[in-house]
Image (tube, rainbow, N blue to C red; front, top):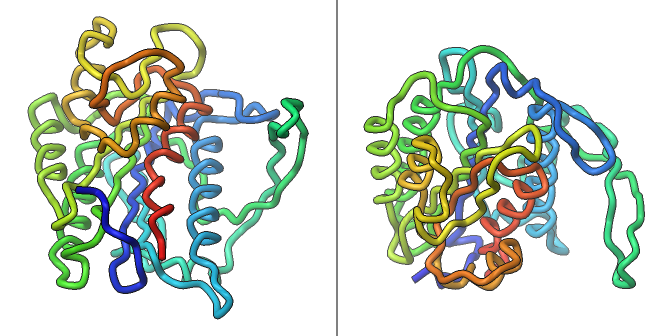
Length: 285
């Protein structure tokens, strides 16, 4: 399971669900900059999209090893953010898309252990937004239909299964425990012959207050929070191949399997979790 090679004939898929509610206006630190959560999440997602496209570059151009989608949710609706607005976008198309650019300054750790400050220009396929409510249920339901259609395609039947990242800073405004866990279970039940769809829920916080939870191995690690328990129940068990990378993030002893979720975590944790969630791209050929 979770061993399929990624080729142009058998691609995999990534879906980003991005909370764009009003609370995403709160400030966090990303690299050397203080930004709103909305800006930070947009930058992190754009950097990952850029990395996915770069991994598709070959001598003859960009090869479509991935299907990529992003859904923003705010006010009372969920909205497709990439491509033509109703389906997945291909790396070859995204690489040619004209869109705004911004410079981002961050730190990079050198092999010597020292840090270096550098500035890079990134394309902004995803624009920051912070407005209104948190219709998480609508976003999950939309991703369910999107990924269900992807898995049904004959050409994807043997592919590495899709990975969905749900990035949020608060509770849903349009769903309760039952409705959210039910739609999450339906998403997690989708599959290719190589395994079930992976749903990773990432809850980001403004500051360091509260207990930080990253890839828990059981509910015993969770704080006394019904919301944290709900995210745990909504999230996928992580495949065994992810264990070494997860242990590096956790920086402590733990027994797998781990659950694909975080609670009260930083933007740095978001970056680490999204990098782990896209580890399957190393299977490209």
